[in-house]
Structure formats: C-alpha cells, structure tokens
Amino acid sequence: MATRKQIKTAIEKRKSYENDYRSLFSLLYHNSVLVDNLPNDLPKRYLLRVLKNRGAIAYDKETKLFLPFSRVGIDVYGLPKEYILIGYNGLVLTRKPEEVVILRANDLEYSLEEYIENQVIKLVNYDMAIEQNLESIKTMSFAEVGDMAQLQSIESMQSAKRIGATIVYVNKKALSGCETKVQQTGAQYLIDKLRQDRKECMNETLSTIGINVANVDKKERVQDAEIRASQGFALDCISTLVETFNHDAKIGGLSIRLKANTSLYKEK
Image (cartoon, rainbow, N blue to C red; front, side, top):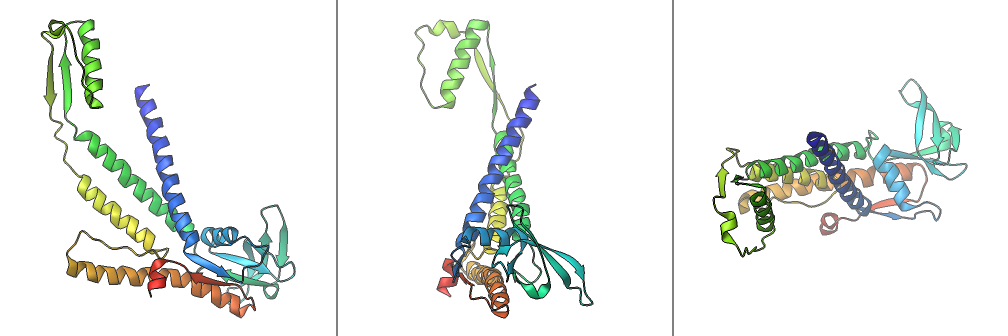
C-alpha cells in the first residue's frame, strides 16, 4: 500500500513538473514573434499554436480561413494533389493546391511541439533524479525507546527538529535510556553534475525558440566562445520560423508577416 501511494505521488509530481515546463516553453515561444498585418478575425495565439503543433497552416483563398490541414495523394514531384482543411468546430474543406496557400514554420513542416515534449521529459527526469539523490544522501537516524510513551515523545521531538523548532520537556527522566543513532547511507553526491546537465538541456531548449543563453560557470574565454555559438544557433532557429513563414506568405500573395521579438534578435 505504501509503495503504491509513493508511486502515485511520484506520477502526480512528474505531471506537475511536465506541465510547468511545457507552459514555460509555450509562453516563451508565443512571445518570441510578432505578427504584422494580422487579419482581424485571426487570433495570434491560434496561429502560433498551430504552427508550433503542426509545423504549418493552410490559408483557404475562398473562405479566407487559416486552418490545419492534411494531404491527399501525390504527384510526380511528391507534392499533394489535394488538401483537406479541418476546423476545430468540425468544418472540413477539400481544396486543390492552387486554392490554398501553405504557410510553413520550417521547410520540413516539423512540429516544434514534438521537440519540446522530448526536452520536457528529459528535464523532468533530471529533476526527479536530483530529488532522489538528495533523499538518498540524507543521514538516516534511528531512535531506540523503552515504551510507547517515549515513542510519542521522540516522534514529537523529531518533527520539531525537522521544521527548526525548539521543544521543552518538564520531565527529563521520561526520556532516560532513549538513544538516537545515525547511519550513513553510502550514496554518492551527484546533484552538482545533474544540475549542470539539466542546465545544458534547458539552455538547448531555450535556444530553439530564440532565447539567448550562456554558461556563466565557465572561464571568461570559454564563455565568449560558447556565447557566440549559442547566439548563432538561437538566431538561426528563430530566423528559420520567421523567414520560412514570410517567404510562403509573400509567394502566396498574403500581407501577413512574422517578426522576431526576442531580446537576442533585437540586439542583432
């Protein structure tokens, strides 16, 4: 029963951590770009969410709607013969390629959400490992008591000690013969290494949405080289989204444009 309860607690904690990371990366992504000439009936959050989750969105020239899509058939060049546009309210439209404009987040129409989800799992694994290592290195203590009355007193004292409180007993003799012993766990302290690996994973994820990061734990000369490398990677990532989308919009005759909005891009 105790094991099942601990497993349930761990699962709930993992879900909470995953939601925290997922929300953090999503809100940073949504703030990483601005949308110029956004149609009045097109919510910015909807547009960016579809681009993040599906890697592309289709503009229907007839209805002037921006919708997720799927492909039907292929021609000699491997391009779709038709597009099926799907609205969240159940609307389904079948269109020829010339009747739509496909706006991509990248040339491969790769879903950034898949990458973020994989990174979130890695980060949560690091967090859980850090907590487990922290728990494993704690010195265990054993209290030897003579009867149940002493057991209750010792339990109260241990609880007070954990929260940093002071407890006073009028009758010291009530605790005579009681002895607390400690035992080393033998576990190795790995938190510093885990935190460093977690930081690198976090920085890598932030760079993919154009956030400027740097490892300040290293020497200044090494920092400069890493900062330049990470800045270049972050700029390329945010530029891929902006330039690919804007190219497709221009070719399709649309006025809508994305513009990078991260501090790194503004500094450039």
